[in-house]
Length: 392
Ligand SMILES: Cc1cc2nc3c(=O)[nH]c(=O)nc-3n(C[C@H](O)[C@H](O)[C@H](O)COP(=O)(O)OP(=O)(O)OC[C@H]3O[C@@H](n4cnc5c(N)ncnc54)[C@H](O)[C@@H]3O)c2cc1C
Image 1: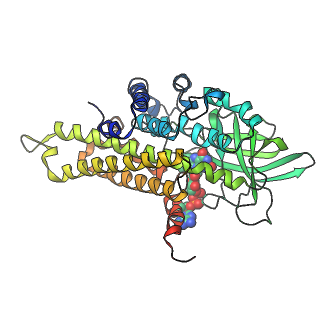
Image 2: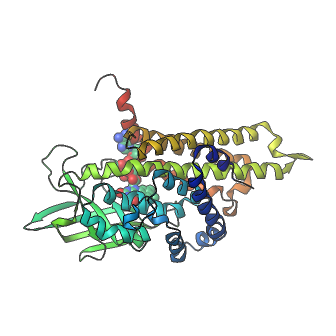
Image 3: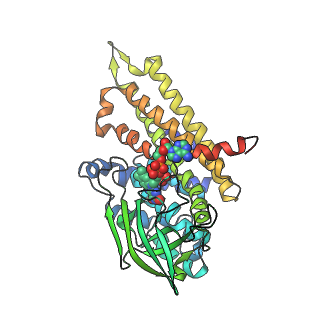
């Protein structure tokens, strides 16, 4: 059965992008979907061969310029990849998704020519992965004031402290560390970003245990024990590291919105089919009950409305005209609405929704990450309200 979301994408996306989407969707249907249950039940991270296949498809280089070996694509391509793979599994989609939108993106936006030449070709080919080291055990939403420090010692810097929640840490070649460098300077101007190799002396990684969401995605804690890096490891300007991080998050939030909508799109198709198959009260499919229909209709409206909105945001992003509030709003609304409706879709389906093989429980759990990741929805409302205030 065709995905209902494809009906909307056909009117929103140019033909060559739809062709790309179809290739990734078919790859996800054939190579990812049949294997997910096994990976989940065996508590595996996305296996190396699946990552290699995504690399062969060029997914790690999507928006990286062709001169660096990438596909020369844009934010629309990235979001289409999120919709195509996230339909089956957010955790599989976030692996190339975070590698691009959080790993390679800061380098593309703020790297020097030398840094780009040194890393982008390997990142585009999937031979290297950068992780985004913003969050810390003691610093989540208050990310402008890191507890990880970098102190200048002659011609190099010494980094100490701990990052956590680092997506893709298991496969990472480098971590972009956001560290406090000038505690006395004004808010937002106290920190600097550094590119640090994961195999540098004093860097220790550990996979975070007990995580019940995005189960196939690697999430690590990374410790820095007086790690020495040269000055040319600085990404962007000294003491302007927060700007590097927040600029990156704009695109990351669009990608997270695509994952939330991919889950809603899956729930819509799953419920449409099940509601026709499941017979109760003699001969009635449960889809004939109006309350079940309401959930199907609301999912369909959410998918059409927010995919249209998201594509509009992608266009603005690619033209350099997307405000931070706009990226935050589409992420907040898509994640909240998809979470509410996927929970209702499970209720509309009944007990079968408790089974892992039915697929909705995975999306239900993964949707929680879309509400707190890349800025918790509650905290992002501080940003969203700013242009609405009549005075500060
Ligand atoms: C699976 C996963 C993957 C992640 N990947 C990465 C990654 O790759 N790199 C990275 O750096 N980080 C990553 N994160 C971290 C993520 O960005 C943080 O979880 C998020 O920024 C919120 O921080 P926190 O969890 O510390 O919550 P806190 O900052 O402790 O906030 C807790 C709660 O307090 C409330 N709150 C906080 N501030 C406000 C406010 N201003 N207004 C109203 N309410 C507020 C909200 O309810 C919020 O949810 C990941 C997180 C998860 C769960």
